[in-house]
Length: 166
Image (cartoon, rainbow, N blue to C red; front, side):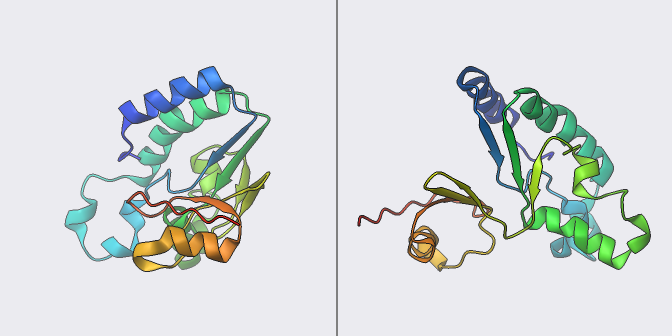
């Protein structure tokens, strides 16, 4: 956030209201954290106008609160590499611990928070963030072969699919 496509979110949210999921899984990187990204370190032009707390408040209000209000039996948040940047910031500045960590920025009291690299199994389907996966142009293929099961992941900014029959 603020890079979420709110029209796409509104469509997904309308579907979720009708579908009424028992389990809701957020795959990470919901909070962009670009202002503290190591990619932007020493490049103030890239972070001009970005504010971590304001982004957290907006993401909580416009995305996470509505998702939590859906009332799913289980809410799962798989931490991505962008949220990991919060931990990196706290490691550099331990005095800010508890002020800018993910559960406080996004009020995740009703969510099970899985750490970066964590997996959630729902039946025969595994959910991961995806930043731990490798495979170059065939990352979906490599993910299926490595996991030896159906796997759903994000992180990559392009669509990829692979089917393996057994």
